[in-house]
Length: 225
Image 1 (tube, one colour):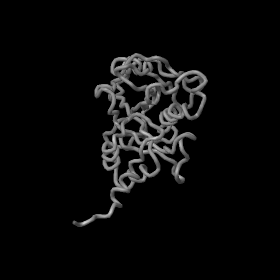
Image 2: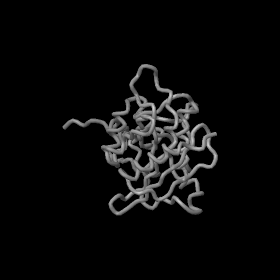
Image 3: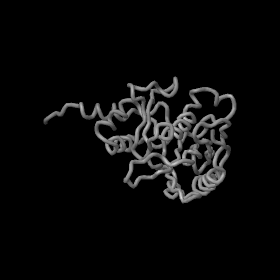
Image 4: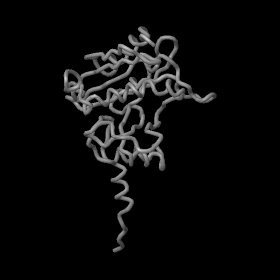
């Protein structure tokens, strides 16, 4: 059981406030498993027309990174949501609205529960087969972690108390076909397809499935003149 690292929470809060915006609300965890995970909500503004959720607590402990490899041992995760996404009141009890918050909490605990690590380009899905959708109103069912593209570059890394260098990674939900594209052709192929079709870090439960678009493009027959 963890009650949270007060110095870490304070450092993350200051970092978020400096580089993203003022924190509107913190979703505090009352019971914690392995690490104490809070969610910081930075509300949308006219200049920043999207909601941001950032964890604090994942970096309480180092991840089990591969021995001898220079990869970040500490991380926090974030999600970007469309402006106006319900983040308080009874509407948040609806799974169709709550699932990004649950996704972040699960992500923050995952490397510590599984004794592994998470980094840029890593994907998460059910190892036993296609995962069920995150919620009834979407077919998105897995995710990829990437460096945040919609936030200031200086936000991506924090030097926290105790010498911890914390990386902030954006959780981008994927369709099953997009996950399979990434696993077969690599991260660059998936990211290129997302950029080509205008997919940003901002979660859209009904967005275009870029793997199906690419499949149609590859499957289109060539016609000679």
